[in-house]
Image (cartoon, rainbow, N blue to C red; front, side, top):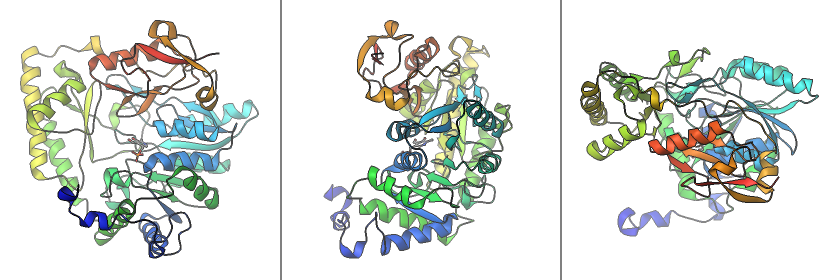
Length: 454
Ligand SMILES: Cc1ncc(COP(=O)(O)O)c(C=O)c1O
């Protein structure tokens, strides 16, 4: 490592010396850096995170929901939200997002769906302790956070936004509004994903006073290492400093590259581009720097397309799905990368589209895996219950004991405590056959599933 990175790297990998402040009781350089970030990102307070957005989402849930209280969230939330439910003991009230089966991609959620969830809870004599929204989704679809926040605030319910993929939204006039600008109480951003800090470093931003800041701090301290890495912390401050130099122009080039890529790729036969019209719910915005390309007309899966462009052309996508591949354009993108992406898509089109005409790949269309959920145990009850392994055939109808996702995007298809449906099993087996990696299951081959002994 010394040869690769230079010995200087290790000189800065420091412990918590007096001059270097304390992440969990900051009153020196860390406090100063967090205050500067708060000013830039428009929050009342910002916390630097060394456990990624994962620990920010988990802490936000713990800070707002006590054991047994209800969290309203979309069923396509990232696995960090489900582990947040396990840690806090909160009970989920799921909203099923609109699902585009042609693309095999879920969208966001609407204020109407949140209102319905609040009303249904009320009929059961319950109230929601918080609402968690993922906006943008991994594919860049934004929900109307403004409307949802107004609705929730009229019921005094705090709104947490998993904004892992939207840390750049404040830095170009044509980007969607940020969660905080729209009224969110807590917003967690993966600075390391879309801005330039080191992997694992994220920020949690707060606004208003519906959530208690001391509780948030306590939860963050509970979930993070007592030896936070200073290279990660410094990289968050550096990312902030870089943005501060040119806050409204820094993404100009990336925006130009995105327009150029979309213009060229839209003319390639057999490749389609995901846009807001792919959904009927009227979502207000899509991240212009996320490029999701449909390949189903080429008669190949997104996983196959991804393998081909990676092996032949050294093009690395952000994520592959059964029908699509998603690319992220950002500050590091070069003109040459865009040309390579366009030639990769031309290569796929020339190889697979022209040869096989325009047959539809109906055989491989996949259904929404989670629109018929029955929860027998809360995620926490299931997590701590006695379990056993059941064969796939035997597991159908049993209570799931593990969190099973295709990864990326890390959206659980099976959640502990839910009854295992045929649809969820078929979905997992289908995408696995097409080339998806399965994460979270003890048996990665999916010959068996861990179920609860109930
Ligand atoms: C929507 C969403 N939320 C949260 C996370 C977790 O972020 P991190 O990797 O920063 O822990 C991810 C990671 O991919 C994600 O896609």
